[in-house]
Amino acid sequence: MTRIFCIANQKGGVGKTTTTVNLAAGLSQIGQRVLVVDLDPQGNATMGSGIDKRALELSVYDVLLDSASIAEARQRSAKGGYDVLGANRELAGAEVELVELDRRDRRLKRALAAVSGEYDFVLIDCPPSLSLLTVNGLTAAHGVLVPMQCEYFALEGLSDLVNTIKQVHANLNPDLQIIGLLRVMYDPRITLQQQVSEQLKAHFGDKVFDTVIPRNVRLAEAPSYGQPGVVFDPASKGAQAFVEFARELVRRLESLRR
Ligand code: ADP
Ligand code: MG
Image 1: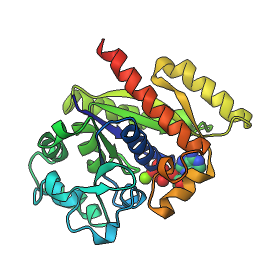
Image 2: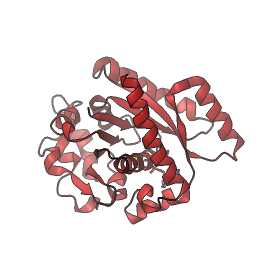
Image 3: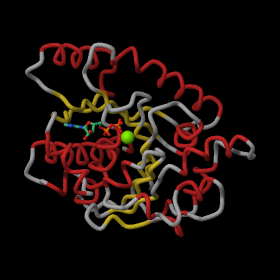
Image 4: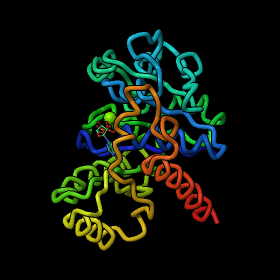
């Protein structure tokens, strides 16, 4: 069974892309077949997987507009060990062009149906907005993974995302659920982060993953080498945390099935 997950949070810079590429690499290391879909016109997940966004002949843009299939447009991240449906600035135009088309919010879902049997996981890296692109991601997905920094306004920021998820759940995708919240860029020396982390657990209970991703400079350096941190420096604390997170996710999904 293929699991299609969105990595979403409408704030920018919270660690969505870092989570996407490192979870993909971590899952690949434990034997899972993974496709990363880059739904952000910034193309950071594409670049961070070692694929030059400026050189893409076909991208997720062509797939959304139905001029290419995923099988035609995907590429292999040799370092990461997973496939990538890449994105670049062209995707920013899709937002406007899609509005004119029918079934505009189900385009990605339909395209994924043709390849999903080839993967155990599809990870969709969403842009920092609750736009039509994000709605395409949420409509295609079974679940949402929410990376969060344990900052003062973190909980407030979540309510817009939770409302969007509820709307998509009610109108477009009854399968959609929040799989879990992942604490990222965590620094246990900061008392406020400990407090917010406790609040998160009090509020969301089991939905908060046990694994915590620490703030770790190797994770931030890796993209400039076109690699997920998990591959760039496997011994680093950040890399090890993401591999542990991949294991936790697989375990959780197995226990959900029972
Ligand atoms: P988003 O996709 O939500 O905009 P990114 O994943 O691009 O966020 O992360 C924002 C910035 O923070 C990037 O420069 C990234 O390298 C850095 N970063 C992300 N996670 C960590 C971490 N755990 N430790 C240190 N730096 C991180
Ligand atoms: Mg990003």
